[in-house]
Image 1 (cartoon, one colour):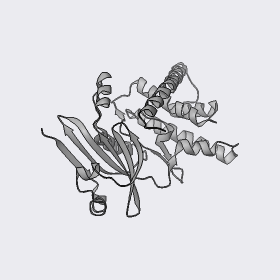
Image 2 (cartoon, rainbow, N blue to C red):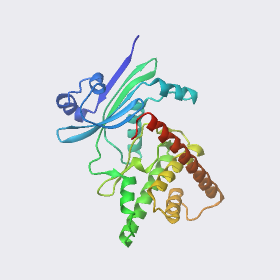
Image 3 (cartoon, one colour):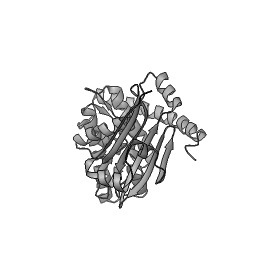
Image 4 (tube, rainbow, N blue to C red):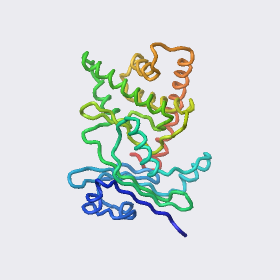
Length: 277
């Protein structure tokens, strides 16, 4: 049985990763046992590690027969996680959207099917999930300056969404938790392994992304209808909604409700698998 194994390390960081980190080949990344476990899901783990004063996240994907069956039942081809995320990071960067810095990537394939893979990215120093920032900042009545700040954040998120969608890209996990806000208010978009590329993005993918975003806004609280309308108008680049825009808004609201129902079931499954407390 013949496997195809490929590993790539960014040339600027090769000495740090190989000499100080001890990551010499694909196996050394996949078998790494140090660091701090951040996330564990079926077939996937994320570990934080430090090297020479810098912090990195090592995301490792391993073959899981249950996940394979799920993709087959949904008539989907299993994802190439590390390769896809690496390419998507570069594609998003080309749009001028800030994201993580890719450091290293590797995959092991058999007959074109990914058996295992990893991607190493550098930490976004000082940045926090936008969802957490908004929950903290919006608890009390806002001063005029903070209201202006909130408006600017809403517009930045809308611009990222519009830039991706107009370029034929759909995030597919477009929740506030995947936006990170830096101390200088720069906004970053992360977790790009599932980004979909089309020459022209079908409407259903736009509805999916914006429905996910709208659902995560519901979880934050203290986001008014006026705030949502400001986002939608800025995203569309219009001053008022016509019939087509109103129909899109209704579709997004319906998708938000479906996501809410699905999320309850998903959390129950993850708790049964002991992935959540």
